[in-house]
Image (cartoon, rainbow over all chains, first blue to last red; front, side, top):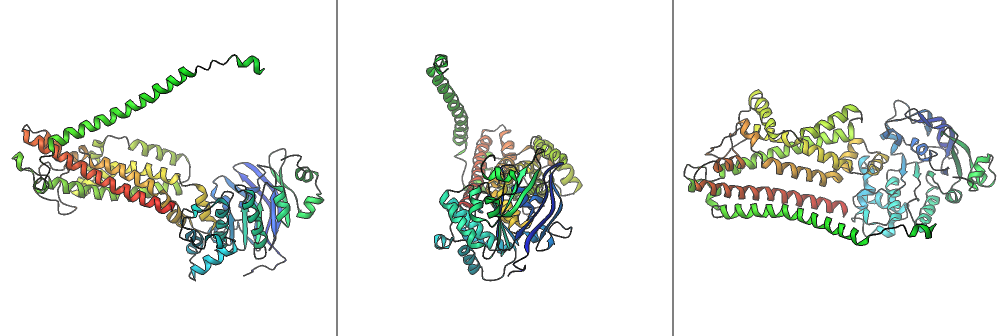
Length: 260
Length: 294
């Protein structure tokens, strides 16, 4: 399963600059996402956390005014090379969104959707069960797989979305503020699940919640917009370092709650 | 501050409540006028025509003698034309809406196209009749056939179907599309498996509206040359034909009292066909909606 050696980063950005139309929203980001670790991206509202995350699976391609310079390497290959089809890389890079977005289909069909569109020919029942188990949802839904996914609670829906992402066997999972629409108990469940998943997957999580970053992540990237509104990567280090001994005073100001 | 300001409110609760009640009453009167007129019309038609609505009326061809005149040719003509026109408008309309919403880039060309589709929905139907006569009857040499008639009606209602489908497609939240793309679905798979099923009930509503309009159209079909006296059932897409509204119009314009009765009976038949088509579509839509919501 693992196509990348454990010690090399699965995603690397090199001098990444992101533009919406003529406006530069993120500039000069160099960071790595380590394999089988959890990397958190933190920063104040509007600092481009989600934009950065969406560069990692070319989701920004859907925005007409988006363009970028620099490179994003996924397992050593540049995602933005001319020959790369975004559809082809997206199934290797799972994504979980801010609001749970289950399809208006049955629980089973939600999880089976990804394998079906990607031409899975194996035992679908086994794959769906395995994915839902990995997302720690099996015991709650095993008797109601035919019911609509919309009948689940918000926290369950979000775990279903994680199961759905896992079903296409990604190497990395991008999570865009996955708990911001959830209650504290569901949030805790997702955080525990993330720790569990990091044994087999690399995870990048965008969060506006610093405690969450401190609790779950191994590495933390701090984005902050400067005077000209263009965000920069202020600091990127092990989470322990960032939260106990930040090198930049802006990082310290942010994590101690002086702004943002 | 609070003490100073407090005295300056003139709350006039009673007057505001009165305004509310007047507004409520106006709305109620409006709906009553609409419903009342409709009821009056239905009762009038029914009283005039119910004696003529029977099996013989449904299975007879038009006749010079009012008591022998029947509606079979027009009934079958209407059903043929509407079924073909509906299928065509549905297919073309949904495809056009998908293109405009999912594929076309959002530039001024797309905007111009969109505005003009809305304009087309307002073009008088007789203009479509002239278009149908020129293009389908003469240029494509389809003759004054069922096919030419349904093409003309399909063109007429196409804008309605496109606009309704566009709105239904637009109402599917972007998060659903993102969810599909993030799993490696292609654009086609995302549209076909996620967007369309969710937009389908809304699309069907548009088709209901469109078919309801088409089934009552007379002018464009008269212009393109549908017959008024048809003593045979259309036997294929190239057959000549008439439709219910033309037959009704023809009977109404005769002097004999008996034909007026036949016209009223024809209107009842037209209404029944229209309502059962709508009921079928509503039924389909509700089933689909239930399947989505589980």
